[in-house]
Image (cartoon, rainbow, N blue to C red; front, side, top):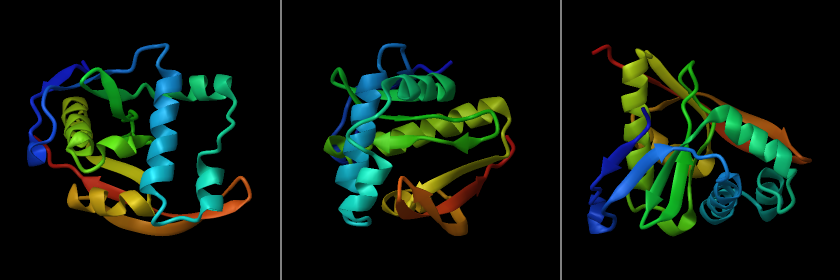
Length: 172
C-alpha cells in the first residue's frame, strides 16, 4: 500500500506525479520540504520569529529522523523531485502535511489529500483530524475539514496560532 501514480493535471501544471511510501534515507529531503513550506507558504500568516521557531535552521538530525520514521509519511514526487509529504496515523490524525513552496498551488496538496482519503477508506476510518496552520487552513477547508477549536501553541519561545480541524468520513 502507499504507491499511487497520478497523472495529475490540475490547472495544467503537473503530470506524472507519484505518491509513494517514504524511503529511509530521505529524511533530510523531507526536512528541506518542511522548512521551505513553513517559511515560504507561512510568511503571510506568521512573523519571521514565529517561522524560525516553527522551522529553525538548526535541528537535531537524529530526532528529525526518528520523527519521520515514526510517522511513516507518503511522499509526492514530481519529475524526480520530492514536492511534498503527508502522513496518516492509525487514529486518522494527520501529523505532517507539507508541500514545498516551489510546488504550491499546483495540485500536490490535493493529490496527497486524495491519497490520505484513500488510505483512510481502506482502513475504515470515520474521521480525519489535524492541527492546521493559518497558512493551510483554507486548503483544509476546501477539502471538507471544519474548525473544531482555535488555539495558540507555544513553540521554542514563540506563540503560534492554529486550528484543530476535523473531517467526518462517509462509510463506504
